[in-house]
Length: 124
Image 1: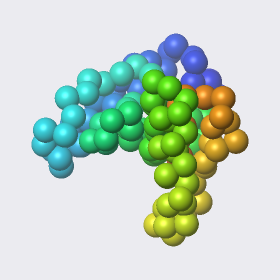
Image 2 (image 1 turned 180 degrees about the horizontal axis):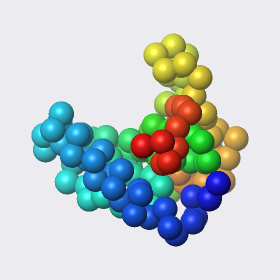
Image 3 (image 1 turned 90 degrees about the vertical axis):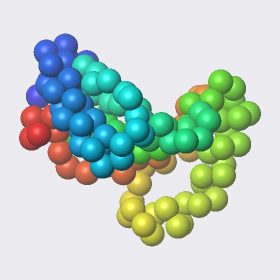
Image 4 (image 1 turned 120 degrees about the vertical axis):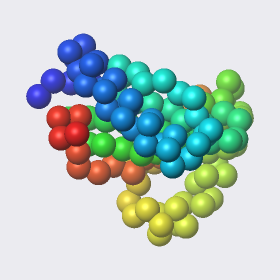
């Protein structure tokens, strides 16, 4: 199975994100003016600075939705992620098991949590 870096998947991603964004905009008019992308992921605004909702195909047979903190500096990013971790029990009660990237949080400016489910660009 091709990896996310395989360039021939670009048109498939563009088609998927176009359909996805049309559905998002029908349900939540005015939320985002984001354009479809040929990449395996898309960022959507959260209404909070440096924080985004993410939707992606992170690996072969997985589809993920998540929340990502992309601050310009480590202190802001780590402080925001620490606040999110404080809500871990509540988040996991609502979503079930999620993937937390806290192991790398001291060396990256971006941090995320993701809910991964079975699915791939080939099944869309």
